[in-house]
Image (cartoon, rainbow over all chains, first blue to last red; front, side, top):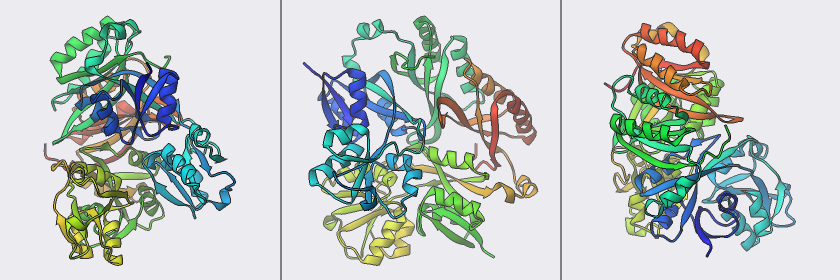
Length: 280
Length: 280
């Protein structure tokens, strides 16, 4: 039976591409039109696992997604990096000169700001998903309207690519995480793979140097910090929680740090333990 | 002569309210429909100073704004915290039951998710600015359409408030920064006010513990960390820069840390020195 994978967006989206690259082609897509819906698909067991964008090299972390992971009984089981490509696509026969509106996700429009700046007459319209716009242009046979969407969407919906790679930053890596209900984690199975990265959340008190003390412990335990982010604690403005990613060579080093940090910090939480997708 | 203050959005927006609260009522507004345009207004000297949202207690930092500050010759000269209130407003005589569309900024729609969830038939339409939507409803005398916008927008454009405070989190503080061209900073004048907070940016190498070492120096110099954020270095995915806010009691402590960190880190930059708006 195919694994049911929840993605944000519809078939042809970046999330779809990542699901194929990460889980292989034998999957059944569960299309979700928001990240909230994606988490609900896991909680209601409509999906076995999910793929979720978590940060990119332009805009940084997608903070509300960190909150979704931390607030629900779901765990990060892996990560995948994808270089995001944006093409401009429209119904067959349309030329760039005929286009009057460009529809896409706000983040995609932002990422193509320099290109779009060359066409100041274009009306930019924000949409819920890049591939969804491509699908709608194809279904309705729209003219004078183009989508900014991934290469896969053009193939999938039979649209013509008017311009390739219109993103401003060519090297736009986005990090995706794989998610699963905590109840369904097969711990033994997970631990058989190489666990050399973990995502953590904790709260420290406001004393000067308390974060430095935590980072010293991590360093002493041979953990390498790959990401840190302070975040206001909701309902308590300006009290900060920390989201931290660490990599390590030996799992026992992580276990030692885990034990120490549980004592040293408030609400210490392991959001997931998984295999580092980047070679160091 | 009135001080010309650039804001994101139009009169009646949260930025307008903050400009009045921070700079007083004797200002001339320079309305900008994007944060890019706001920075351009400073660079072209159309505005003397600017007010910019930088983080809120729900979504965290507005990362692209950090990039704007760091990439241009502008400095942070102050900060202001504002508790964001969202009202639902429409043309006079409209009732909540008659509303079919709600227009607002995507962030405002997100912040009112729970309230809007009670009206699943409502079509949510994303717009560039909260107050701009209120203005358009008033000018066009639209019916069946409501805006989510700040209280001030209802007064300013003569709209009727249908529901007050529809934000999900009642305690939604947003942090704004005041900005000025670096060339125009009157250093002496600035330093006369109490300087007890600074915003910094630096890059560290990837060695284990290098961030801990930096934070140890800060702690040794009696600096208190109020915010930390790692951010990918654009065009070099997964190499991280750090944005850090620190508070201190004595300026000489900050000067000492400044001297040490300039040697210890790459591209050390003081984005601004100013007065902490929060009592500790």
